Image (tube, rainbow, N blue to C red; front, side, top):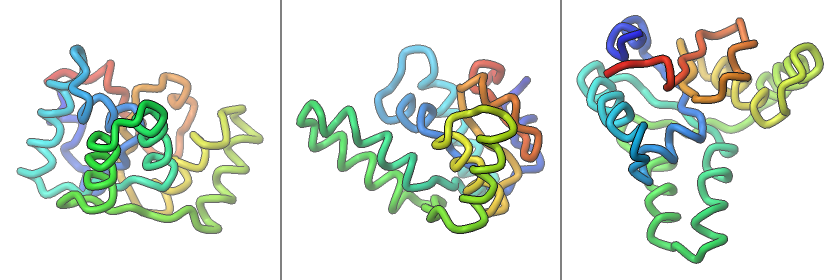
Length: 148
């Protein structure tokens, strides 16, 4: 599916951890798609939503390796990026996460991510985790399935 078409009716897009990492660490396969996504996001003024889980997962590698500049880049993108909102894991997201974990056998962090996306009223969830395709409550956009 074309990236622009996938974002046609999206005003709020949840950004899962892997796509954020692909962008900031300039992944050789996915960086150009993420760059295109952020260009379309700016043009269409799409709000990118993330959660504390995204922040924590993005910081693990830089902290482990003492890469303070990269860690700071993640903090800025996730906490202060233009058109970006960091949403807490509230009760609604926690209940959704528990239900999704129980019914779909996806890991709790993934289930909570989707719960945050739904409670933040996102119209789509961008990930590259094919396991997330089990979710039916929000459109799941797999980066591997999107073309520039």
